[in-house]
Image 1: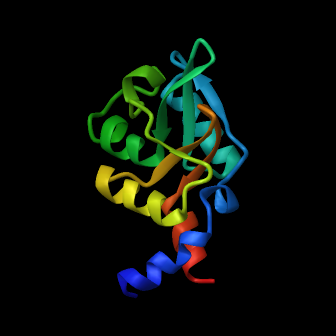
Image 2: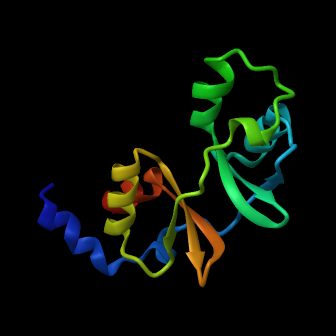
Length: 133
């Protein structure tokens, strides 16, 4: 697939393929509690809030690179394992912009905003799924 082929997806917006269901926790939620939420929800990321304001994200990758690799206890707080600052993209951006931001930041998940408020999450899997349609 050429760059031009990918750019043809510029008419598809982030809001068209993002997940709207979000699970959030506070800074003190433990790694074990987060892992259980991810397992029960069949999801790979949970947003972390402080005073009702999103400040980070805990992903399945964070578990591999921070918790497991460093042998952290399961009662480690979200604050110590989250990725922060939270990297976002506007809901009305094309999915090609989301792919570019993920590539530049070397991440697989972006929080989606609408007027500064988090309204969803878009993942690299969402992008790949869209490209195979």
